[in-house]
Image (cartoon, rainbow, N blue to C red; front, side, top):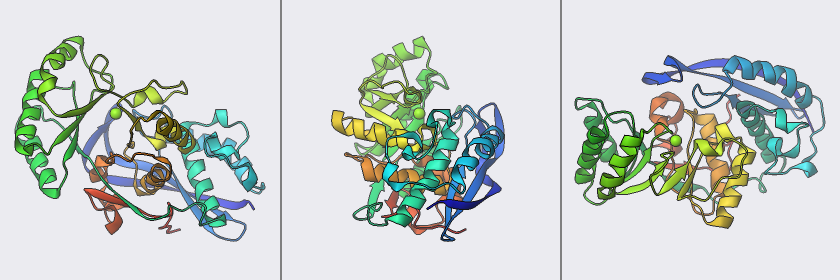
Length: 336
Ligand SMILES: [Mg+2]
């Protein structure tokens, strides 16, 4: 069993509204759809889509690496199912996996998972579809009421968990905005707060004295504040310390590393929250499937970025916010 041919299709998906990514404003989400045909003529799809500010490599660097390193190993070489290992990069089927860039590893593992599912559908299926609540991603406005109106729309749509980036405006202003949400939420609303390692010492002091008033599930990458959650800290290969939650971005970690962390989290009783890097539907379906298959204690999904790519993600009924139904098989919808 092997792959016989592969095509690469460049795509640029429009954002719902202009978005700053990495160093500048990006009008479009660039990605490459890789379609590989196996020796039975069946197409398998993956998405190569490094995200500026999350992945160290650019799309052109990832694509060059794919052509030079991945394709020669992937095409016309037998894939040995008996070597499959969920927690090894490239699922144990790839030589020198330590060389793989994370976006390339993720795309390769998406292809391999699709292929494995084709080989043995029952072994690579969930027992049943799983529906999970999602959290909403909310931007705290620097001024004006736009953020408040956005919140009301999300609240009316049924969201009850709100993820907000903090440490970007004055702490007192962010606190006031969050208090307003909490008053409206009347005991039902919960907050996930993410500082992206960017909070000043003064702000940490502010939140230490005031944060106790708010229903905060965890502080993500905000050194000095508790309960602690890790996201960026999981991106290197070091062993992560225990936390209130680990935030997993499979498109940044690789699917195999995500499985490893999910298994370790299950053993240590650490909740894992699934997150993403402005991924489009193909990657989200695959990441969600990995999560559903290996997570011992599923949490509301961090798929609030889906609103930024509405045509791609929310067009399917199974992916209607605020809840997401994860299909039994990750590639239930392949349109090669
Ligand atoms: Mg984060």
